[in-house]
Image 1 (spheres, rainbow, N blue to C red):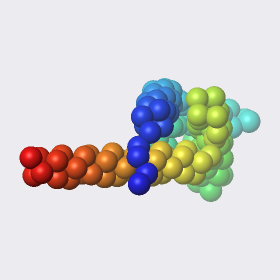
Image 2: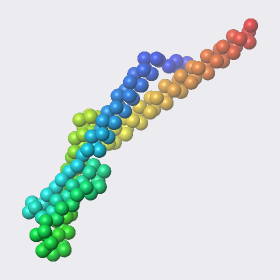
Image 3: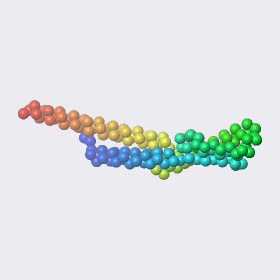
Image 4: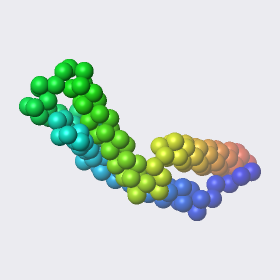
Length: 142
C-alpha cells in the first residue's frame, strides 16, 4: 500500500500557497495595467485597460475635418496599438511574477498542482479508511 508522505503533502501545500500568492500579485498588477497609444500625427489617442475595455478615446478637433474612412483608420490604428501595449504589459507582469508569460503554462501548472492535491487526498483517505478497518478488526477481536 502507498502511504501518504507528510513531507510530500507539506511540499505540495507550500507550492500551492506560493503559486496562489503569485497569481494574486499578478491579478493586482493587472488591475492597474493600462496602455495608451497616440497616432503619429496626434489626431487620435486610445487608452485601454488590461481587461480590454476602452478607458479613454481622444479625437483631436483637427481630425473632425478628415473623411470618415481616414478617421476610422486612425481610431483602429490607435486601438490596435494600445491593445499591443496591453498584451506586452500583461506578458511582462506574468513573466516577472510567475516566471512565464504563457497562460497555458500557468494553467498546466495549476492542473498539475490539483492532480497532486487530489492524489494526496486520495492517499490520505485510503490510509484513514485502512486505519478504521484495522481499528474495527482490533476492536472486534477483544
